[in-house]
Image (cartoon, protein in one colour):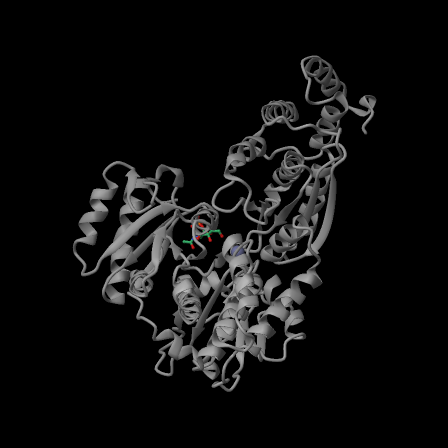
Amino acid sequence: MLPLCSLPKKASSFLHSLSLSLSAMEETQIASILKSSELYPIPQSVKLSYGTAGFRADASLLESTVYRVGILSSLRSLKLKSSTVGLMITASHNKVSDNGVKVSDPSGGMLSQEWEPFADQIANASSPRELVSLIKDFVEKEEIVIGEKGGGEVWLGRDTRPSGERLLRAAEIGVRSVLGSVAVDVGVLTTPQLHWMVRAKNKGLNATESDYFENLVTSFKCLIDLIPINKLEISTLVLDGANGVGGQKMEVLRGYLSNLDVEIRNTGRDGGVLNEGVGADFVQKEKVVPLGFGSEDVGMRCASFDGDADRLVYFYIPSESCGDKVELLDGDKILSLFALFIKEQLNIIGDEGKQCRLGVVQTAYANGASTDYVKEMGLEVVFAKTGVKHLHERAEEFDVGIYFEANGHGTILFSESFLSWLVGKQKDYSEGSDKHNAVSRLVAVSNLINQAVGDALSGLLLVEVILQHMGWSVQKWNELYKDLPSRQVKVEVPDRTAVVTTSEETEALKPLGIQDAINAEIKKYQHGRAFIRPSGTEDVVRVYAEASTQEDADSLANSVAQLVKSFLGSS
Ligand code: NG1
Ligand code: ZN
């Protein structure tokens, strides 16, 4: 507790006037926040928004934000009966000088969207007094009781960014400024590891990082043992770790796995810069080889993680490749492989298996050819807004819901009821029978694949075991369907919020007239499709275009980008 006398005079008199009208927050609590927030003044002219995946900005601007998200996380924990909440310091695929912060709910999922407006408000509060007032109102509205029945618990993780440690200290102070709340530093982790650990902790399961690895290893091995005849020589997988945390964690995991031969490059230890010319976002958007890969890798099975290892894409360099072009197997292709494998197991189970509601969730960025492919397989396909929090929610509607963004962020969710049905069937069917093997595979997939969020490490293990199961090379997998040529570009504009889209994000409502102009461009191309939306993680407007040839997709993307510049001006 902080003695009132240690407060600056001005703050102390404010405290006395405010505390007269407070019921939910005690004086000592207000004093605690006032005092700690003096340490983290908000930089001028910064307007932050929780966005697609938490707050992101240049790391030098973020201390006050991270501190305030620390407070929010403690309140979130208190609101949910002191369940453990996660706070992750990362800016994922952004450049190394950026950083960010996002919150994991006790379920392991993203922070409830109902709390995002409060996050925006406190992140932008211009003074300690305004911050305290906002918190006080929110605490009253949410009926959060501080300090009576124990405090909140927040686990803090960070990626390998150099600014991470300093920001983590700010988060700790924020968490602890809510009286009785504890901050636990769980160290350098991938984003999905933290989400997995938070979920496990709140389910009363073993929840350390070693437990995470043990879970992956056990379920991977179980799936390997269930391969009927291993038709494929295990060939080397070459992994691009984006010079981030994912490659480093894969090095640990590799030590426990005997059925996976993986060479890891771009671990960040050899002088490479995080996300610079490397990583899943770079490979997916540019469709070129990451640094450290070249002609000596032609035909090899390669994969890329993003900076915090929640995205995974595969690629190979074709023998006829000119320059540095790659054949990309993106999130859509991973989704299709997963869907095929799960459908195969359900078919083996027979009529009962076919009753399982297996569905797929994609966004407007999904390649049209992938959507046709999963629909032809007989699966239900639904579309959600960009950002995994939106896809996750829709995937929960199915018995087995597979969701992926084209950029490689996704997972497979199994409903509790379907999972207990599967476990029951494991006991009914005789061991070693085809049906028993099929249900055992599905149970193992549910353990292997992260049920909290998309996870590059667990996704990679599932791709690898399915390829071994099918006896497929990466080239054979790529033949599932042929992508429609597409192009993504980003346009820097003075104010990206001037672009407002429909809820499906496929049409722009503002600036007025731009959608008609985009439609006129689209009409010029065979199989043309294009849309724009403001990024939630970078200060840009994103343009996506598809057409029947790569030249046409490039040209459509460029003309739409020109329209964006002429309607919004370029910065
Ligand atoms: P924004 O910057 O809002 O487009 C990007 C990705 C999202 C999601 C978030 C979070 C694209 C086009 N957008 O969001 O899908 O992954 O980052 O990391 O890839
Ligand atoms: Zn990421």
